[in-house]
Image (cartoon, rainbow, N blue to C red; front, side):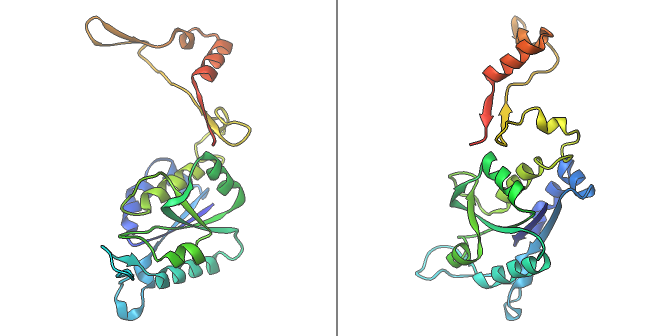
Length: 226
């Protein structure tokens, strides 16, 4: 799976890309993440400037369509043999969830993420360049970089061997591509935050009776797939 991120702040991703499973997945060539600085696609006379004032007035600046168009076209040209989908992040987009992550994982091998900033992006990018608008929640962020990280991580964990042993992925998966999230406990069996107060692990989990444990997890768990 290839992830291509168009952003004016590529350094935001430095620590994220060089830690834990994401770093290992790249080293094992299970995923490839390419950062594209939008300023590299600015007009020569603009000296890296990729935004301008909005028509009709208003606060802030809007990212221009020209540099984004050139960036997307270059990425697509380089990945002609791949099945590509271009995504822009906006609070107005479709909700991103486990079902959508599974659809993207199964349907494409090259994803292009357009990360907006400032007051947003020229609407023609949404209408004419992006294949899809996604939202990670009904709130406003400063840019699309955090949503891009969330989508990358959610999809990457679906790729075999990214999490290590295949069992890590299969044990909680549902037949429809979702997963079951249930409470987890570890040692100590009894934790005393202060004298006279004891926080205990549920008896079922320390019973050794696997069937009852499975039933407990099913009852206490929540299926995440919608």
